[in-house]
Length: 337
Ligand code: 89Y
Image (tube, rainbow, N blue to C red):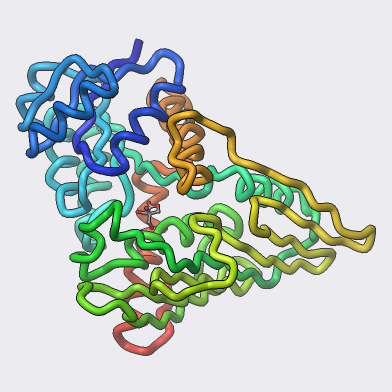
C-alpha cells in the first residue's frame, strides 16, 4: 500500500482524492489545510485518519511516501521546497508556480536533492484528447500543419474557485497551462508565441480572455481561451473543442466528446465519452475523470517506472510557454522560445 498525504482541502481536493481512490494500492493517510475545519470536513468525507493545520508537522508525523499538493498557486513553491527538504516525493497541482524563475529553481532543487517531482497536469489525459494523440501518432491525417484549440465559455468559474478572481495572472496561468501542455503533447516543442489578452469581467485582477499563436513542429497552433461570461449559443464547458488540419485529412473534437476524422475515405465520427465516476461533478466530468489516468501515470512513475509524462522537467517546458505568452501580451511582440 502506497501511503500519501495531501495538502489543501479546497474545491479540487475533494475530487482529486476521489480520483486517487480509483487507483489500486494507494491510500491517503493524512490531510492538511491552514483552515483545519475545512480539512476535518474533507477527512470525514473521504475517511482520512489524520488531520493537520501544519504541513511540516504532518510530514514528520506521518512520513508519507509522497505528498500531493492541491493548494493555491502561491503555496506551491514553499510546499515543494518543504517536501524536498524532507526527501518526500512530491506531486503538485498546476500551475507549477507564479514566476518562471521559481519554476526553474523548484525543478533544479528536486533534481539535485534526488526527490521525484511531478505536476498534476490532467488535461492531456482527457479521453477525446488522448484519442487525437493516438490518431496523430499513427499519421491518420498525415502531417498536421494547422490546429485551433478552443476553450471558450461563459461558465462562472469563480463560483467554485473564488481565488481565481484575485490572481493577477488568471486565464493563461489557470487554463492556458492545460491547453499549452496539450498542444505540446501533440506537436512537440514551440519555437515562438504571439499572444493577446483582455479583461471583460470587472472587479477581477487578471485577464479572462487570451489568444496565443504558436509555431510548433510543422504546425501553426492557435489557442483561444475565454471566461468572459459571454452568452454563447452552444456553451460546452469544460470541453475543449479542436479543429486540426493535416496534409491527408482533418480532425475535429466536437461538442459531446465526439472525435470526427475526415480523410479521402470520408468522415468517421467516434464518440469518446469520458469514463463515468459516481463521484464526478457532472459539470466537470470530462476534466475530473482525466484525473484518474493522470494519477495512474504519476504513481507508475513513483513506483520506479519511467518518468511521468508531466514530471517537473517536462512541465517546465509548458511553463516556459505560459510566461512567454504573458511576455508577448505585455510587449505586443512575438516571443522566440
Ligand atoms: O482551475 C481550472 C482547472 O484546472 O480546470 C478547469 C478550471 O477549474 C477552471 O479553468
